Length: 101
Image (cartoon, rainbow, N blue to C red):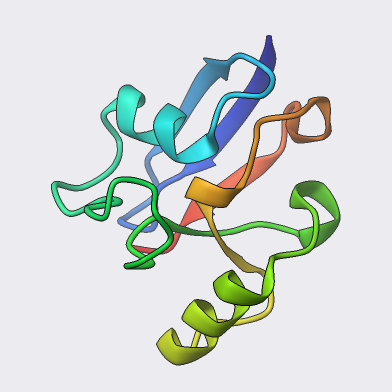
């Protein structure tokens, strides 16, 4: 299992959790209980952007055009991705992922 480390935007709380490779990152966040009640309220359909995280694109791959359009409409920076579009991989081992909300 890849170890994915999340840093919450609120305060300095750090939560480390284990996640199986090829699991959807948004599902890991939701299952860990660290997402707020509105986290990914579209059900991982890339419609709301509420699952946004700050992550290096070299770790998560390039976003699809639909995701880029959603993130641009939200005014988010280049390192922001929708976690519903990211699969956990070995590249994430020990990395820090910051939740945007």
